[in-house]
Image (cartoon, rainbow, N blue to C red; front, side, top):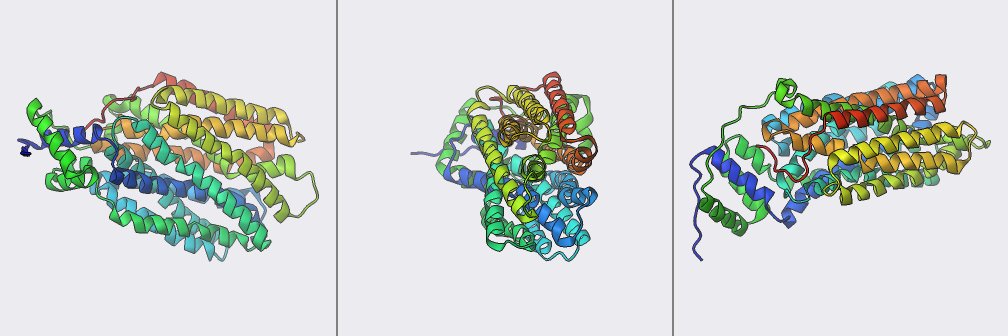
Length: 472
């Protein structure tokens, strides 16, 4: 068979070919490998989130500091570090490429896991946790960008949600590890092994990511067409690429207008203002609840249902961690539902439904009171966990990767993720003080009201990206 070589008359036409070839591809084994290694990084976020929530009571007991202020700093340092991590890595990934930042951030996670495990004081642990959070935040924009830029357009939402689902997988894995360590060690030093355990999956991901190619879309957008061609062939195979060339040559596509390079300030110009509002405000609101509730789920459950007994703190932490594990299983179920519905129902619809469900879950917990039955309290957390991952937690991660063009994709996603982590920081630092001063019930009602606001904002600034090709 004669293979017709297509020579792009301009870089714009070459970019259009690469974008089309990826959009219309059928997922290959190597595309799935890229997806899996991006998903593995997101799993580290979930792992880190839960392992710290389980370790927190033990850390406080070990250092003899039980103040709500110290709890907020210990739990929130990583979340605070995720703000500059997401923002800076997004800008760097658009400038220097996805592959380099993907490798650096997971190496930083391994290093900071080791440092956290040998922390000698609360202040040193807070410092190391900040930089571990920086690595976690850096993962958001680059993992999302590499997935949407390498996977087919068909069921793209499912691929991105599937990658983000590993956050819940990481949380469940951390719950199992934390429970096992508490059972085996039965010591105040168990927290060191909990925080050290994150270095194991991170090290595996770091080694495997060395084989990843650069995003062909990003390379083409930077004018590095030969490298883009090589990466495209690596992902799809030579035969598929040549076949797509023949089809493009027959269509004779004309070059499109050259878009200018993206800058952060462009996110606030009229063309992108509504998209920036859609991707930032709901994520900010969602993370207030997700991290405020997620980081302190064992603590809240201990307050509401475990502390009625007269057992020691290690036993209480073990019981609360086990109860939280039951609730966290529904995080995975929520993601599974999203996988099925995201390309059928749509991103916007699921985000609105999820925010409303989160509000209902918080209302159930609020109405339970401080002396409620175990089943009623856990039911509220189950509703919250199910609907947060059915909707906003998945869709706020997906939408920024779809609504921005390639030149702005990581920058826009990084800015949106940073806004989310600002909300997460507020939730993490304020929730202990709020529950202490105003009670758990009233605090849950406020979070529920914020969730309803998130639903309204989503409706007002909605942008339907279902089934659309990515913009160059």
